[in-house]
Length: 211
Image: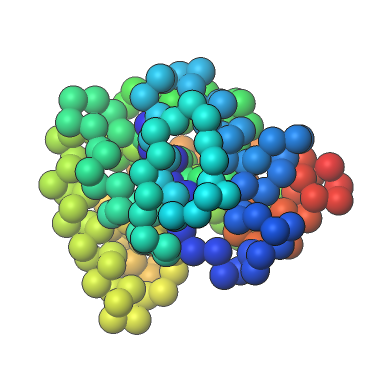
């Protein structure tokens, strides 16, 4: 299992003096909480982080990546060659139920886990992608789709987050159009949510001022 926490932190802007992946949740850093949940399902947990001493984690193997590196392509050397690869985004608050749904899914195919649109539970006004998974026979297609996604982002033709674009590439739908096909997507619509900026943290019922 991979927890990708090497993404950029510009929108967080140094809030609370820690990276957003290390924001406090119930007395522990968000990333450490996710690791604690993950090790219930596997003892093979890897975390990608920037070269920053504030990212101190227990229970996982840490891999340093360049700041702002792709959450997906930068994990290529960690993909499983003999089993399912599960990639969790490191700035997400996962409920135990959501983690069980993601880790317990054994369907043989590329799968994305998230919420298509706004959440009535957390108040986030837009959809979020929380995790993806695939198997060894999908590695070549993953490489192709990621190359397509990053080429489109580099060219500026599509600027949305790469996770959604990766899902659309697998679906065979336009990269710039928000279409979700159930064949590739499992809906998680509870307290699970992304913490990308200060507003997300402060709004979430399990964090910020409302906690």
